[in-house]
Length: 438
Ligand SMILES: CSC[C@H]1O[C@@H](n2cnc3c(O)ncnc32)[C@H](O)[C@@H]1O
Ligand SMILES: [Zn+2]
Image (tube, rainbow, N blue to C red; front, side, top):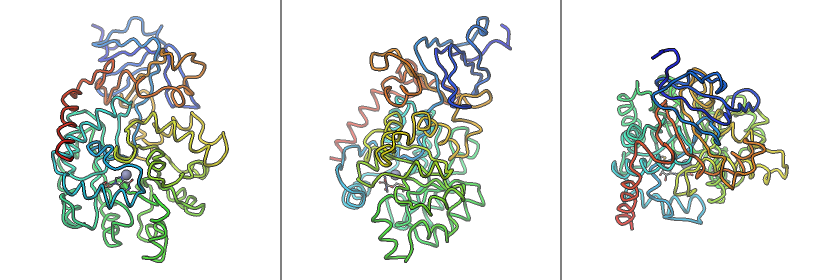
């Protein structure tokens, strides 16, 4: 065996959408994986003599980077469909928080996260920027599944089953983080829930910790008009101005939603390098509004895409979110040129990676990056004929067309069969939890 031309995995693909350069699409190329990384991308004809432990031939498929879900609560799959057709605060205060108070514990978070990760692998997501309680359970699920996971250590002022006050949330998060400092797939972030659930003092502590430990901060911000008007009444300023005064706005912050930012706030966010996680389905379903995404992009902000939780979406489907991001921008601006397909696809991959400071490792197909990849079958009736694969990926293909998913070089879904998780057992778990919750 020649070690220079023998690989762990060789993937021969009809198309490679690399998200590198200007919408680069390569045809009939081969990608080689060794250990956790992409080590070669060459025309398939040039790889004729190459060998591998596993060779995957994808004659009608696109190979592209895995989707980066920039905002989610994986464990909330267990509350999918529990309370629908409500506004955010009604949904949270009268339905979701009471249910979480009754049912959320370590096992709930582990089982719900595993179900969420299975759903995400089946829909082409390879990285989740998560935010929930029981961080150890989220991290355990991520290790079992093999999902690249940002474990958001949630912080609120009020007590939950997980902690009694902000200091206890912080202390548990920092202690639990220790065990994962060298984990290739798991990174802890600080996740203050929202400006309306976190005090000034706690935000100041979070900023200090973020600087001291080089940790990202992930927070729901300006999700609804009510959040902004309540803050004006309580603090005499909009949440964004308050966060600015507290030093929260910087390149480590990922603001989830940011629906109600005005032009001045968008320019400030761009100048301070605050990233946005756009959640179009959740924003539509909770009637929160249409986020000014094209304005954010024009101002130079980094904008990625997220699903939010399965209780407010109700899918963890980045294909659906990417399509909605492109469509909703056009409705919001009455401009068909707003968020074109290639931009939406870049937001779902490389821009999300950039927001997470992981764009040197993931987000595009490039030699030296980690092998986080997905294959999408373009041979179906619904994706025929194929004039433009980027258009199809955003407007025509769906999660059902994803055939293979690799994370860090590991194939976690092969021909729609999960390899690290047991789909039947997870469905049984979901059923058990429904009986308990009902
Ligand atoms: C502290 S993170 C988990 C916390 O957040 C709640 N949540 C889920 N989705 C949203 C949303 O869109 N806005 C605000 N809060 C949300 C979830 O139920 C947990 O309590
Ligand atoms: Zn959320």
